[in-house]
Length: 405
Image (cartoon, rainbow, N blue to C red; front, side):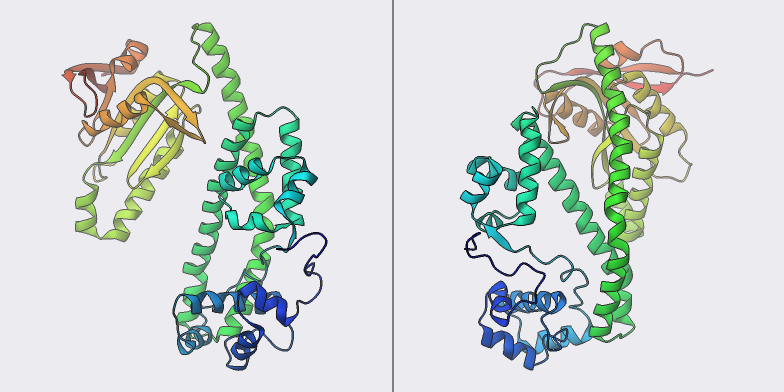
């Protein structure tokens, strides 16, 4: 275990063969043999970050049972062109957990919970880098400023899940649209690795300012919506329990999606879903947003039942005749807010409502009708009391339509 008294290389100096071997979990003799056998084409007498990254990859492949010959062929064909591993090598450990807790003035148990919430491997806690320490100091400042621990841990989970998804998309999309075409063209492995690293070096510096820009724009929008929501809640005398929010929940999905995949194939069906999700996102009222998607289903949460109901009926009316018909279900109620998502009985009820709808229909509950009835542009027709799966009592469901002129 690395400590501040016995710190490894800082990263500014070239690592030794022993250090490279230690990072890969093998012996120095093994690394020397791999280099001699051509498994580390990036090694040209110096242990560059790319060469060190290749050693780690070869080590992982050997652990998974791949032969030397299989790894050599993959390296020569460019399959192992790890274009960012060298740029983002694991940071060097300099502190133990105990030292980090004392330095940042955060309990060891809380540090472990923070790492788990962020989605980082708990193994990294055994050897904390200077970069990790800087993060922990920022966290300590946030907690000392008055942010409750429970709120920070939820934020950490949202940050971790979202940024993991972003990083995964960055790697996979570059692989699909850049890396694989190079392999099909037969570009040599070392040349491909250099080209991929150059591309990543040019593109990745734009990621941080781009995300800062988007974060600022969205933060301003949601602060404004929160202020409006607080005022409206006070006007109607609606006060929710701590952690709960009064919301309008809509679920929308494509009827017949399974049949669509069979008739048109997976790629075309996925394209239909992507266009459907895009059209939902681009047409929603200002106070509503897509919370998550699951296959062909979209969950939307807003604060204005009238606006979201009007959106639903207008969305159905505006569909082209040849487009797959979605079904939409809406319900008003209270939801428990956790980690950027919404949970609870009323969310489940909205999901059950959409399951009773047919393609092209908008179904809503009595709570929605009580809010939106009589509004220009909307009309409702009672279907009856319907039993929903998982609910003991039947509820009134209504068809929602645009009002006829």
